[in-house]
Amino acid sequence: MQKLKILTAIATMVVASPALAQEITVWDVNVDDAAHATYYDHAKAAFEAAHPGATLNLLSQPDAEYYTLLGTALASKAGPDVIWANGGAQAKALVGGLIPLDDKLPDLIPKLVGKSAFTGPDGKLYFIPTTLQGHVVYYNKALYKAAGLDPEKPPTSWAELTKVCDALKAQGKPACFMMANKEGYNAEFFLSEAANQSLTAQQQADWLAGKLHWSDPPIKAILQAWVDTAKNGWYQEGGNSQTMFMDEFALFEQGVGANVMG
Image (cartoon, rainbow, N blue to C red; front, side, top):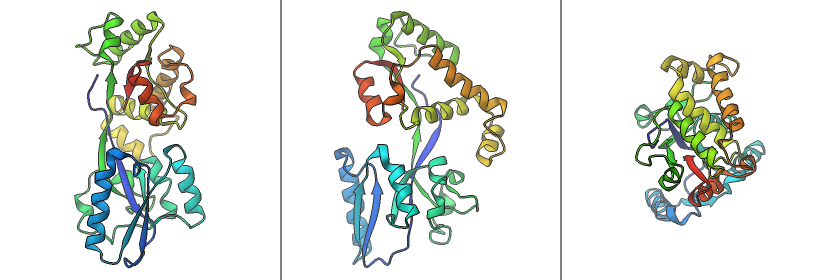
């Protein structure tokens, strides 16, 4: 079931407009990750070379508390100059503490994809997307084989996925899906994946525009599916107390679950 589900974005945004002859503070959650070190070192060097007198101060914040720390900082008007944030609802919730970018990057903005995910209620753009993330479902071939499933033929429909989970549940372990929902990320991922598969293009547009509501049948059906999968034993015990980053993926690598959304 390793197919593209839905595109989301990661964005950066300007919180203040500092003169370049000073230190510019950037918040992110990946700066301390050794796997990203080369990227950040290059970005810092390139920016400072292009803007003599400016010093880019890249600060890593803990992922689990990031949005709480960010909300507090913005509310006290003591936030960083530039921040990283996930696109969509998480980004839109922050626009009250930011400045719009429409008149600052006129040549770049027309080239951007998915701008509606980064605009505020006033229609102005507050974020610049830097990446697009494809949601997929990863599966453990060894666990499929142990459950009598064909690891070379992963499910391609909801009905087939249900049969896979039934087969895994009959064994007792492992869980069909890893679920680490302490921050609510798994619920968001489930909604995004299900919405991309089940909503029409018009319904998706209405959802983004606020015309399709949580109480409307298409959305209620998705939420009910989330409840039903939990009742049907798709997830491991304790999932609501575990974090997606990085508990969920570490446990998946250990074989606790046969599938994981990522």
